[in-house]
Image 1: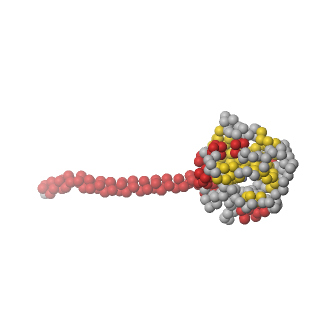
Image 2: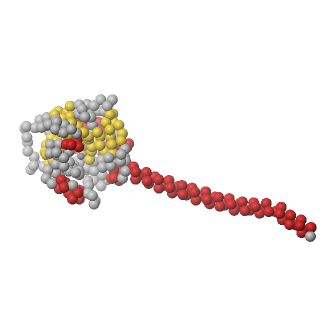
Image 3: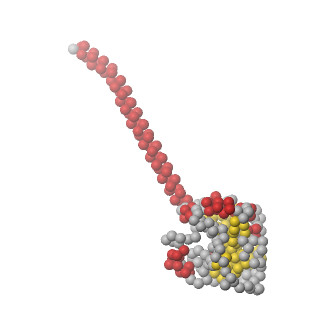
Length: 289
Ligand SMILES: [Zn+2]
């Protein structure tokens, strides 16, 4: 959900593609669905990544992405598309149903996106992302059900990347475990990135069968990444900590000064005692007179 002054409604002003045609996400309802017998089940090559290889999970301040192996790619699309990264859309405190795509108006708990770029035509994702045939994204709708150990292989690292620019290494595993069992049923359409800059460059494959994750897994993700965590960064957190430290140091100095002052008072009293011999001298002088 994107609201507020920089929310969804403001995107077309800043990013012209966000108000255009071929926009994603969409709602899949019977009026727009059409069976296409030419569509083939996708083939996933290199998706089974050994645990000795590692993926980098990073919080870029807008979302948490896991960079994938360049050895992973998809076949049975018009071009060969190489994997780049995956990320999730999981809603927030106010909106627990965070899927981007909907089916007959129904939102799902969350949505996984595995982003690929056309590696037959473009050297990297940056070159591909604004081209009409540049990207292919696999989308998995997530609904609440039993605990999902495969998704946990990513989720358990989330607490390490709560703040902007934090990253962590995730041991390799079979990324195909994140996809539903039925890979032959999916919605296919030509659309766009769902967030700015909204380039109309995505060939979408949204699997028809959702994958289940537990309520605990879904809600712990939302608590790990409340809005402020992604928007504010570790720099802001550092400033807050510095402010708290500053206040503590000021208090410590104030206490020390107060203590010193009271010590000084004590010193004057002592000096009164020291003066006593002088008084004897005076007395002596008086006796001399
Ligand atoms: Zn996405």
